[in-house]
Length: 362
Image (tube, rainbow, N blue to C red; front, side, top):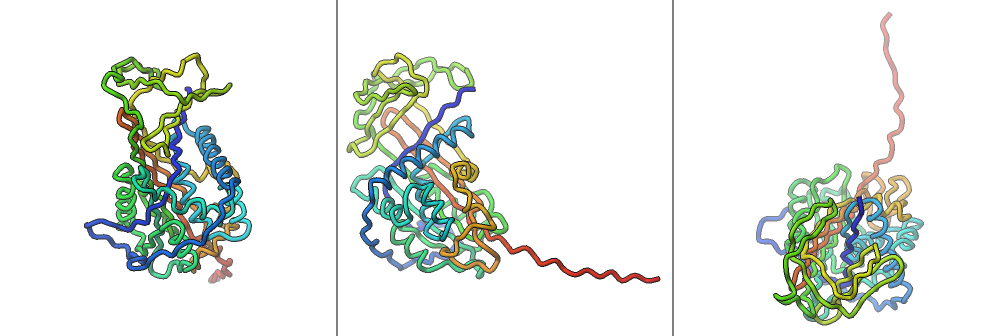
């Protein structure tokens, strides 16, 4: 079966957001009344942007190799993992920097403040949730850095069913309802979640008109032929090499663009025809990231997240990187949402073997 890969490659900014729901929540908002500081000016080298772009492409390629259909948001994954990297030390930090495409300081500088221009179609929010009851004591510097650079809200929660509800509500709020549920259960050893949520709602610079739309037979991946609404246009930004061809269609303002690529070059001219469509995907990216070379953060014995905080239950390590995406493309524009949840677990030290004594009666 032929694979079709689609990437929601959105570069954009961060919005400092809080939990804004009228229904009752059980988490305690520790940033209530606390303002994030102004980040120190960081010179973001060109190599950092190139490194992050390389990460984005490799993430798509590796996910494509494992999934039949792929829809990923590298920006969401980068943001969640960069926040996490602020709590890493030693070889764990070095490995995350190598895979993500820059030093933690450079990533912080590159990912802060984007999308805050007026009338931006991109909305981004970040948050950190940790278990109450002394199960973990987050490092204040770690929380402050993520508040300063990522606008991350901080919530202390019981890590039970009420927390699942609160987190999913927060994600739904900040993806404008496009991702309704990303967390289904909380593992027994989970003590912290670092979450990114984004929403993109862009209108085409040149919308499709009524005369550009008509029904046409379309063969889907399973070989089924059906009548769908097709959108027709002539695009001036045409991409082609010996492996793929595609086009670029800009959204209003010219800062963001939709890029479509087909992996089999044909003789189709610049005249473009594509169906209206919507797609979604849900995946745990742990295996994907390990395959990309990021394995230390997932190693319960070797991971070093001591800059994140102290946990009496054991060492901290990444257990999950849950990722969920949604996209809809139609005649007026595109809307998409994505959420990434990095789950931190505690690894209890192995118990010392106990002496055994058996009393027998003769």
